[in-house]
Image 1 (cartoon, helix red, strand yellow):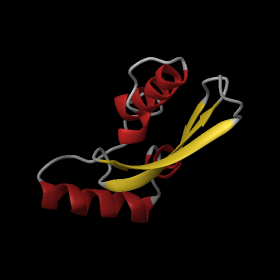
Image 2 (cartoon, one colour):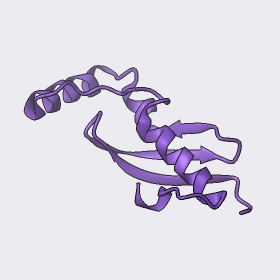
Image 3 (cartoon, helix red, strand yellow):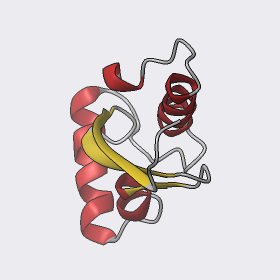
Image 4 (cartoon, one colour):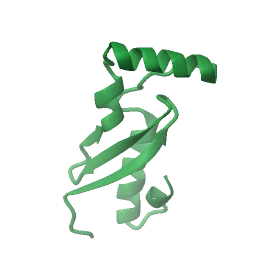
Length: 91
């Protein structure tokens, strides 16, 4: 078992069309910089999301801390640590 307190990675989040940083704590708690920025966007950020969404042809919005991108990374991380077949390095 590895001795670590937190792990951090940056991924592309297609829900908001931006890179976000995921933080996983040893106890399983999660943080996502995209959630902090996009869950309740200010006027400028909301406008940018709307414009990008129109260009991409889909609505952009944060899906919250329980979105599959965040939970999948955490689950793969813990599976890899337990010796399972997780793909945390490939997320």
